[in-house]
Image 1 (cartoon, rainbow over the protein chains, first blue to last red):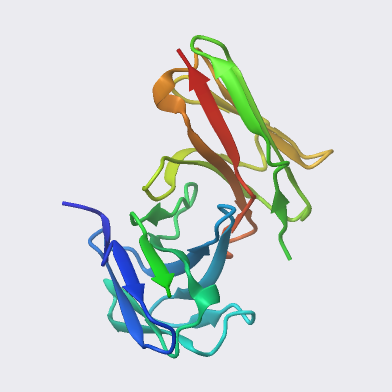
Image 2: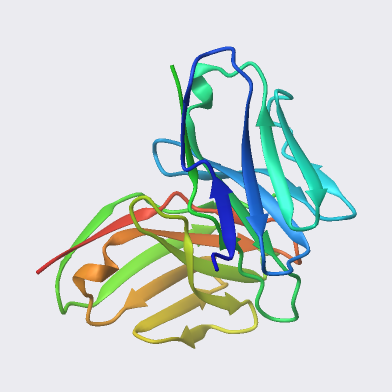
Length: 114
Length: 111
């Protein structure tokens, strides 16, 4: 009964390919996110999305696009993969609350572009 | 915007010692902070949070201290155990904006 699940856990692909990473949450949260973690462990927000609004970090290349078929899913599609896209990608979800607003993270997808 | 930074040390402690991990933030409007623990091969895991109207909050073996004057927060882990070895992140936000993460500190606990 994993709260936030991502697939695949590992993804190795060649430059120029198009790939997708899937994310599902069963917490009933309103907002989902994608973060990128680089080799130095820095976590950087890429997208946040709820049923009202998509917020895109302007530094994210437009080769990256989030797709949300419903409230419980936020997939990440990447076109024309580049070597620099290699990183660990984390999905997360949250629910606005009066006090606690902590995000719940998935276990990550390690993307390696060769 | 929010900027939350950690000096990125590797903190090495002996089992049983107390550990202190520090974090500085830049946005004085930040009103909510969280500490996360990330073990190898896993996603960040919520440890403890604190609102800006508090200066201290305690959990099980962990305490977060917030000093709004100097825009600094710390995570104290009492009686550190080998299972505490991980990367620790502070994160902050204002209102319900997206969390911004600091750089992370590696905590190594030796038996």
